[in-house]
Image (cartoon, rainbow, N blue to C red; front, side, top):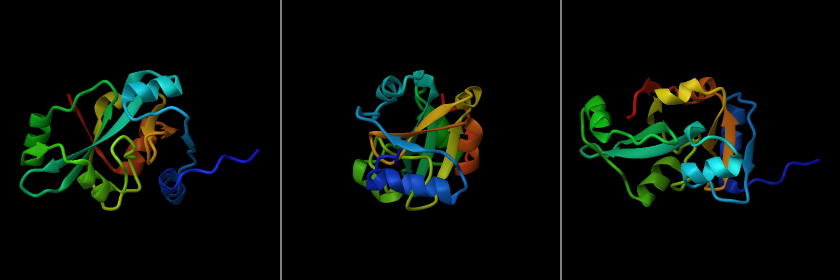
Length: 160
């Protein structure tokens, strides 16, 4: 049986996975996965297993920073700012789309329009499987924490 055709943004993530040598499958679900809670309900996993991709912006440099956090964790912006050496802020939707190529709620951990400084939440490493957004608020893919680190080159940190 053929796989259903993916939307353009989900196909972009699928292509990025294949091009990077990952044998992972993007799926689009009928219900939204925009929030970690919605994603966990749609997938049937724990909220903690959702690898949410959050974009921050340096206040002085306007450089984007990707933080991939466990679904239940809030990013401690003061700690992130200290790590970066500049204050960070949450950018608007246009900035996120321009810097990543994805809408908020669909930012994938790879396939961005530019190289992003990336941090990965240490809490994600405790799970055998995790789930990440794949280009839009209905698309996801399953992966391991090892896959996540390999595809992002992200530095493991405590985000809380």
